[in-house]
Length: 615
Figure 1 (cartoon, rainbow, N blue to C red):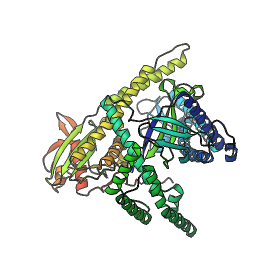
Figure 2 (cartoon, one colour):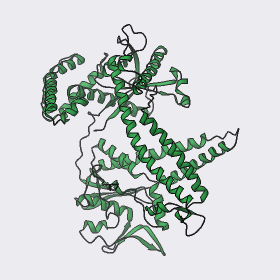
Figure 3 (cartoon, rainbow, N blue to C red):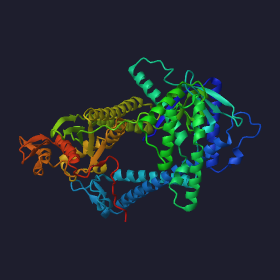
Figure 4 (cartoon, rainbow, N blue to C red):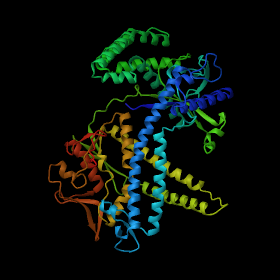
């Protein structure tokens, strides 16, 4: 199940803003000192008579966790940079060899002043373009600068240099209390004496609702709060820490013995957890609720996991609704993050120059939507999807009972024009930057271009979201399973130098098929719709109707000659003598591959991609 985030805005007073600002700067200083090993944990512990902003010992342990997490991320980044550095160095060496030795140049057959590295051609990079000497000289300088920059970054990572920004605090579970109800607030510990500041929370319960968009926001936020409380209740009863999860995989006898001791302690403390829950609810649990929790306890200690059946979800929903209405602070065993972001008009300023009131403050929790777990739909039809060339997607629904294609649609492709405009805007911005560098005291306004660029990028993203939602809604209405091509070969381009293949590659490069499929998968999971993929072999060169009727489907050709020109949108079959849209035919073949169990149908995202090992 996917983990979501509940992000609540804080509404602190002027005095509280000063305290929060000190907390963020102190936390950044503590984490930086621990990361650079300039201080030990004992040096950072608060004195007995501490005044002002201090962090308790348990909260300091969380700082140590943050430092270790960042160190692991830096190591991962270092491996990635090493891989990129190796690629850039190889390219630099190829260009340098080509410039120093004329016999290592692959000269263009059309123009003798254009050439490319012969070493790259020998490696199989046949699509590398020819350029003049000036271009390759600039490329060499750019590669050298990039290599120098990456080496400096690697040196910093190897030295363990890290610096934390005053924008994030990871809170320990003992450092905060939260309450919803009429006046939602969060209480944060600010000193070792557990002195707290109470910060008002802005939730949907206080928000004036005028537009339909605001109503959707209210519905989502209310549901997220309920889901968060239900998830917290489930975690308090049956949650496992990181160390406990590792012990479940234990194989050594001493580790198994330790695991059994921990599980025995956990089993004995279950009744105490139920009593703690009763204190929060200010009532006794009913016999029905107790029987549900006891049944789940038995299941948990047998399988180390629980199933979300209807009775258990109903019990969690009732408890969450009661906790939301309580006007008392709740002790929630979660590790939230306190965040702050500069206001949009001040994001260009340095962080040290910002005042406490120049920030917007949030608290963020992670949760899983246990209450919104959809029931899987009973599939009756198959919805096949194929990416088009002139169209964005081709969709066809096959009904196995009537053996007919009940729905066929081609989704238009406005993205090519949008991305072409985006390319032109990027070129304009680069041109303006070059003019600014070459001329002194010249101010050219590139903000208009950047605003247009942002609007285009947002429009493309919105189009992908709307398209994926429409397809998932269509599958839900028709009780369909969604079937697509395997993404392993999605970036393969046509070979050769023909005009049609160049146009095909250009069109495919303007459509992020993987992005759309990830959105479809995400929305399908929330709707209870299954998504499968099939191997792409033969989906574009077989006739769907012949495949349906168990005839020879290989006599299908894509591209009918009309008035002496080949129309690649139309396909014709010599067996059944039919003509139809080629993209729709591919979508139908994909649907039939799932129905007839051809091309190895597998749940989307589970297929293994085998990559050849480097010698």
